[in-house]
Amino acid sequence: MSTVRTRPPRTTAVALPTVALLAALLAALLGLLGDAGPAHATGSTDPVATPVDFTGAGGTVLHGLVLAPPATADGPGPGPGPGLVMVAGGGPGPMGDLRSAAEAYARRGITTLIYDKRTDGYSTTHRDYGQLADDALAGVRLLRSRPEVAPDHVGLWGFSEGAWVVSLAATRSSDVAYLVTAGAVGLTPARQQAWAYDGFLHHAGVSGSLRHALSDSAVRRLADAGLFPEAHYDPVPVWERVHQPVLAEWGALDREAAPEESAAIIRQALDRAGNTHYTLRTVPGVRHDLHLTRDDGYDHLDLLPANYAETEAAWIHRLTTALPTASADPAPHQDTLSRPLAPLPWYGSSGAEAVATLLCLAGFTGYVLTGAARRIRRRPRPAALPRAARWAAVTGTAALLGALGYLFFLGITAAVVTGPVLFGRPVVWLAVQLLALVAVGSTAVAAVASLRRRAAAATALPRLDRARLGALLLAGAAFLPWALSWGLLVP
Image (cartoon, rainbow, N blue to C red; front, side, top):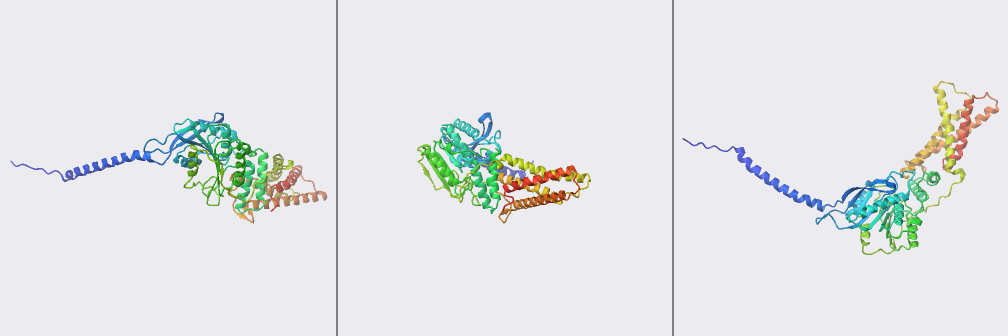
């Protein structure tokens, strides 16, 4: 009986070595990944981010993020080290705005807290620096309680408005070990904002009456009406009580903080306080927030220099061994100095302004609306009504609303966007000025026509038309000084 030998299928002979090879490669790859995983986790340059909640002033719960120095191959990170609470500048202040800056500090060994600014008690027209200072101190207490932070080495960092806040906080608690500020302002908020508005308009090529309207008239009237929050806050007495080490920095291209004046004011205040542990530094090539700029400091780029926080972190670390001695760089140059804002006369006060504005709106829009109602009801227009009255009503309404609307737009955008400029005036403002001229001229023509009609003993107008024409002429009379006060009738 013959023996039948069966040959293993070719596919089996090929598959077994292939499977073994693949298994070996897979095992090797898993081994590499297994070795690489922990190394990546411990050797990453990314800070360790931990969401936190803490209670600020008045029981308001604030949401934040602690960014700790990156872990190392030897463990979860360095031992207890410096801590820093960062306080944003003016505006909503979400923590994301400061995240890249906070990460730069954390990579250099400083545990940093950022948090969303409160919405309860903080708005465009209302804020309380004392309340914000207490929020910052609550952040200091949080960092002092964390194991990666040395409790006696926690400081505050404040940008622009935040510098007003952190300097005030430092006077309220000895828990604050040091201060770092960026773009600190030594002037009152109203005076600083007026200076900044004027500078941005000048940079945009504006040379006409708009500069005075925004940087003087608008600022003073908003402050008088209580719509410019903390307008007259004086930071000088606060800085005169700051005794912690201070690192105050200004960008060489700072166009918002009046840096030449502010640096001198803050230095003199620290000297009066007997504080000899300050460093005043001018940072080359950066703008108000110490970010890079492509427009000589007049833009708002979210772009940090490569060495951001390097000098600051080194200064903070040195505090553990020695306090700095007083030193100051030459301050950034200002082409113009700020001006004190004089109190408004009674006739230019916010109350008088509101009355004049409402009177103009009522007379102009009332004439337009009643005329529209007559046309809808298909009633004939009295021939005795001067046609110039309609022009006055339409152009007066457009000029008034256009001027206020454009000034409001410039205000909330910090005068960064003006639109096209023609003959030293933004096109929008030039159009508003032309409308104002037409409104004043048309009102005068309508008044003359009305007087001539009465002198000629013409047929009397219906009572409603007499009332609307009278209201229009009264509005036109009020509009003339209103327009002059806002610079609508001057170059």
